[in-house]
Image 1 (tube, rainbow, N blue to C red):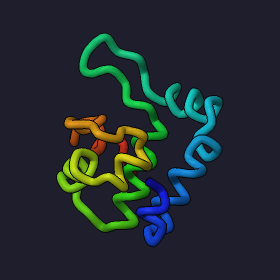
Image 2: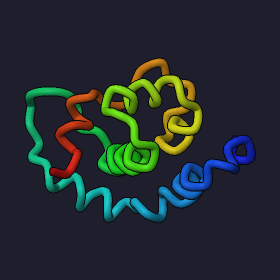
Image 3: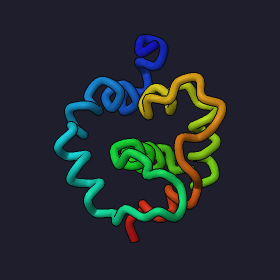
Image 4: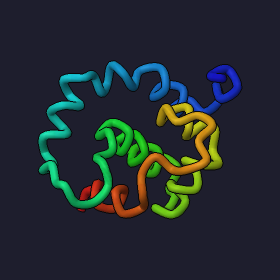
Length: 101
């Protein structure tokens, strides 16, 4: 699959190195930032949201387009480790809450 997207260098880089960039210890540290709450949806892996935000900034798409890309875009699915999903791995609300600013 990676050879099919080789011209999209950032996608290939993130796919290959996401586990090193967001190792288990770093993911735990990121997850501790958010308080566990019995309300709402189960937490989304912080690395998945961070990768989505990186791709969003790189491609210049809106929050709505990120959600669409997670379902329709094979490159996005490859990076976010959600190949062949028929549903986005997180909601627009989760993405908006994660965004800086």
